[in-house]
Length: 149
Image 1: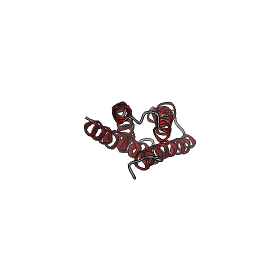
Image 2: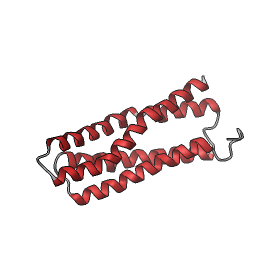
Image 3: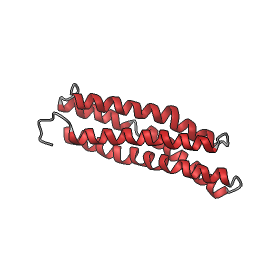
Image 4: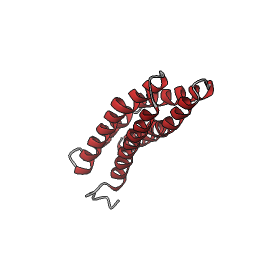
């Protein structure tokens, strides 16, 4: 059962978190193009598509911590420091995505954004991506693990 839970957890992370990080990273430059050429329907369509990808995969991404908790429980590692740190970083990433990235994207898609907001959005998107990178490293390295990894 542990292998199944771990496989679903890892696959969900790749399939759900990967697209959000890529689409969120592509969004600020696309928003700058829309602001520079307001009548460009293609650029506006790209912006809407990137925002939709972020919204949909953010919801799908809930599967990642659900199966992560199930896997950790099955492995008996719920109280380990590396896992607690990963949980905290995952929660921070979720807050950054839900409170800063997605609302910032919504404002720009709806035409309420400015060029300065694209810079802020790029910064918070970078923070979101760095948080996920840190979680990934912790999941691989697992400080204090007795498995030798």
